[in-house]
Each structure stands twice: as C-alpha cells, then as structure tokens.
Figure 1 (cartoon, rainbow, N blue to C red):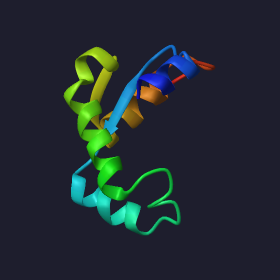
Figure 2: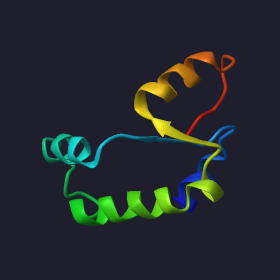
Figure 3: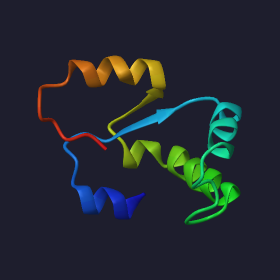
Length: 80
C-alpha cells in the first residue's frame, strides 16, 4: 500500500471496505484473481492495510458511505 500512495500522491486517501465474504465471492470471478499474488496474499494485504488504517488513510468506512463522500468532493480532487 505504501508504494501506491507514494506513486500516486493522492490528495485524499480512502479505504473502501465491505464484508470479506463479498470480496472473496467477487474476486473469485475475476480473471486476475491469481495475478500478482494469490487470493490469500491479497486478503493478507487488505488485512494489513486495515490494521494500519489510521496511519495510511484519511477516511475508512463502508462502500456505500464512501460513495456519498466521493460525490461530495470538489471536482478534480485526486482520490486513491
């Protein structure tokens, strides 16, 4: 996660989360499920990011909550 934040230099850092079972069901359907790491590795990375959320992100919450937050941001705001 640190490398993405450094590379993109976002104005706002948001972590969108949803129930892990929903993530797993969705990821299993994707062609890239095993690309750049296994599904287990991806879930470990997400868990690590969530544990470090206070130092990595400006806001953390549910997907539906953040959709409303993003819609309220000024135009051209860079969000990762």
